[in-house]
Image 1 (cartoon, rainbow, N blue to C red):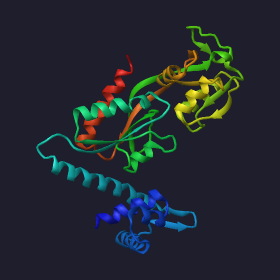
Image 2 (cartoon, rainbow, N blue to C red; image 1 turned 45 degrees about the horizontal axis):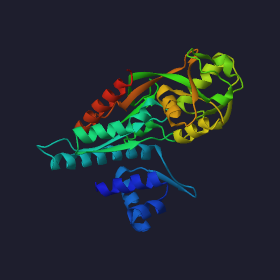
Image 3 (cartoon, rainbow, N blue to C red; image 1 turned 90 degrees about the vertical axis):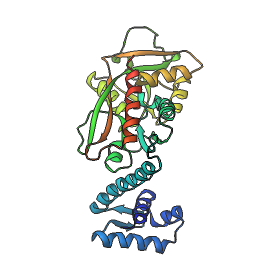
Image 4 (cartoon, rainbow, N blue to C red; image 1 turned 90 degrees about the horizontal axis):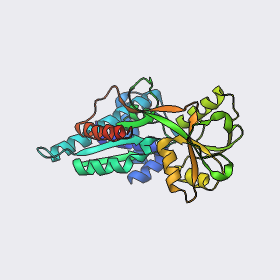
Length: 301
């Protein structure tokens, strides 16, 4: 099996079309189509379905895509191990850090500590609200991720690390006192709120809390960018409810004093380290995992 066929197949899937993949790979489109045909002939299965909208994977395509990611990562690791034989750890390690959580505050520290302890490791960090990290781990696109939830999800393993408490944050012009006592959810009936979209774990936790308290949750905007959320809250466009690390960031980035109060009944979510339950981590990935767990544990204090 020519390893280039796997690379081409991944490029086609990730870009969504053979034409775009050909441009990315600097190949002629007929040549790329021939590589795809050769791959389908090798496996004896149709791997992709073409349409005017692009390409989509068949069930067999999903299986080949997952294994191709793993094989390519193993090849990269083999090359790195050979080059660094007898020396320090080396290789590429991919990590997902879920936004709107304490995980999103660890990226710089993780980069710093990894460079300090293992300069041969190439760290690939992802912070995205539009992709499902557990699925990316199953597909081999990520080796680990800090995400909300405790599972179970078939194909991945969850290791709960941290319970995140949620805080209400708002500009003082929204008439909420800065009292040290927890703020009752009942006091937020009809309050204009800025939150992530409904599929986000933070939003789900807030929705559930308001539903249990039978309080009207008035979402005036759905924001997927933490910096934009911080500016909007600081401008008094609405309030938000966020895990403490994000709430602290919003407060620190505001030029005006903001109200930041724990919510009652308490809203919490578990932050877990997610890895594949089918493929073992490489030695460099284990080293990065140790640093990530260490940094996350420090957030408890």
